Length: 271
Image (tube, rainbow, N blue to C red; front, side):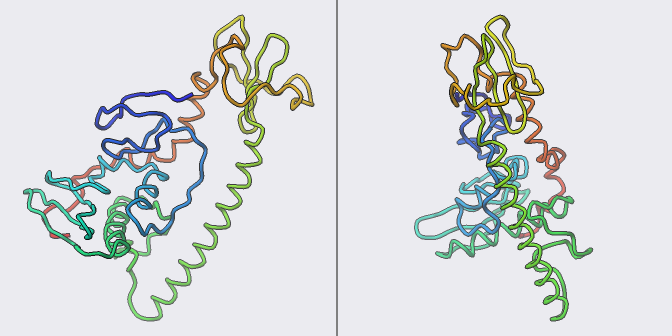
């Protein structure tokens, strides 16, 4: 069951079914679908938005405006203007420096994506999973000399292969763990299976408590549904404090951005 709340960045109403705020593009911490990252090298504005949402980036705080012609000072952004794509930086004094304007969306996205990673790396944050290769800034083009460049390419290639393998494993594990998620009935109690954990409640009290196991080993025979039904006489598990704790624990990985200070950006340079 979808719920609504206020976006913590702009105050707009946002549904729990939306990954990002429709108003400001900030990630929605209450988005609860257990999805895995699918975008690693965005080539379109939509893919870049997905990349940022999957990694929980607070774009408003980071001062990156993806798909928006933002006109206030201190901002990086990309948007489509007719047949052209525009990549820009608004300096501290409000002056705009256009990094790219043209029909090549992939090139435009790469420009803003590279800057996004650079700003993250400068703060010790690596959403791309790449290590810091030294004091040169950690950008994707770091390194000097053909030998160093080839070595760096090999390291990156090996790391990408490792990331793909890890994500495939994580996807398979997630599918196995959550394939039996849903509600199960036993007497006057209702149980909810989430991942490898069990929670239960009953009509005699309001609330969900984590329990070690289901009373019967053949629990599949007691399934009553994957979606909540008020006719069961109990509260919705996904509206409970127990479920909110699960969501908060899943979103804890985005805490690296909590201390993001836009004052660490050189807003006086052209780029």
